[in-house]
View 1 (cartoon, helix red, strand yellow):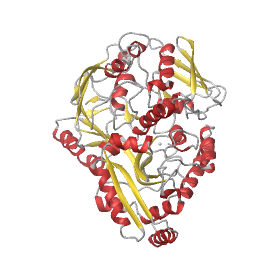
View 2: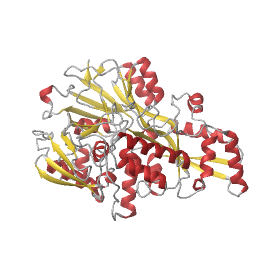
View 3: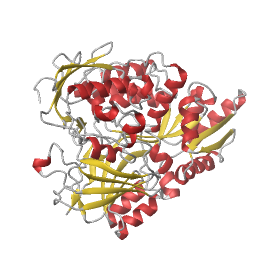
View 4: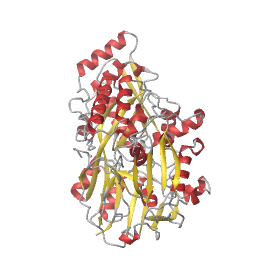
Amino acid sequence: MSARRTVRPGLGRFATLGRGGPTRRGAAIAGMIALGLVASACGGDDDEKSPGPSNAPATAAAKSGGRITMLAVQDSAALDVFRTSNVAVADEPRLAALYDPLVYINPKDQKVNAHLAESLSSADNGATWTLKLRPGVTFSDGTPFDANAIKVNYDKQADMATRSVHIGAASTFKAEVVDPLTVKLTPVGAPNPNLDRLIAVELPYIEAPSAISKGPEAYGAQPIGAGPFVLKSWSRGNEQVFERNPNYWQKDKGLPKLDGFTVKNVPDIQQQYTSVKSGQADLFVSSDQKLLGDAAKELNASELKTDGGQMVQFNLRKGPFTDPRARRAVTLALDPADIPKTLNNGYVPAKGFFNQSGPYADPAVTQAAQNKAEAQRLFNELAAEGKKLNFRYLVPQNPSSVRVAEWMQGQLRTFQNVDMSIDSVEIGAYIQKYAISRDFDAMLFQQWVVDPEPTAFSAWYSKSPFNVIGWNSPAADEALAKGRGSTDPAVRKQAYSDLQKAIVAELPFWVYAESSNGAIFNDKVTGIEHYNSGVFFMDRIGLK
């Protein structure tokens, strides 16, 4: 690593997506939005005091050889780096197996480290960045993992025609080949002292140009990466079989540990748990806090707590929640602690978007506590002005999401002058309503955020096309720009304290459960080491 500005914090000023038109832009936005919906739809539901693994018994090195069975709630739609989400509870473990990250954020200390890359550094405070690659690395088909491959990937990620779920990140910089192992990255519009964080979170995986040249159908179904495993077979809707990559760049270190692994699709998370407990399977990733708690007692759980969580987001562009009194009334009517008490779902009540044990939380700035009297006063005030609160709450069609929505509905029925209906739809319709047509009053969303950059800026900066809820706040914009524009921990901490103040004052959303996810596994499995928001290095995982 360079002693200059090497891989540590990451992203630049926001850049718009160009003239893609509403259909293409909507598709890109929908893809990005889908990253936060997977667990809500089908799951169930750092240091300087960083959120980190709360229970990590499986850090011992694994032996060489053997196979494991992993479980997933759904099959992959594709396994390319463009259309597949970087979400630990969804496809990211498979991406980690196929591709390996260029750079990653270590959730224990929030720093960005190099992995496939040799270094990622800036000598001019983010005006330009230099990505150095390790010599001798090849893709699994033997083609070179070089600077041209990086440029091909990043240019394609930024191309509107690709409909990449990462276009919002890729369009913020330009890539230029300097030599076979060096790429120059130049932020668009203004310096970006935190570009490394953007690369680590949004663009860490690189696909072989030899696969990309064959077109989307081929590169999605027959992916070629430089990771520890290759895809041997794929029975759609059933299972994927992965085998050791004979050309893996760390094979001289005895990696990967496993000969291979199989991913089987088991949509029911309780069945996943039972399968691991009975020995029919070995591991699955979950964001269900009750299952993680149960596993810590009965099996093994390597849980990672991050910023974000499960939240109610309000539509600030149209509908009843354009009036801040309506947002405040609903949030004051509800108590997050009542959800796990009533539903026994293991949720940890949230005090805000930033995890209270994390480096950016300001303990003096938290969501207001429940105040039923004030909530009723606001409901009455709105009704007296002819604005009786009647709203639709959009949720994905799964039992966990619907149960929480029904709890909210029941709580609000104890108040006068408010009526909530539940709009529960399958995930495709959910994304269409939320991300494209924006046909909702309020909606459920879930996020796992290892660092505010780039996620918070992309979601809430007023000019971001991914600001789907329409939050337009000068105070939030200033805080987000300040957080993005500095690598000084003290400056960033103050910036995100200011952001929390804006969130609490303006209530664009209300977080009711803290964010966490992790691996649940049996006693045979070891070697789990998390990176980013909960995925783990697939080269190290194996059998005791």
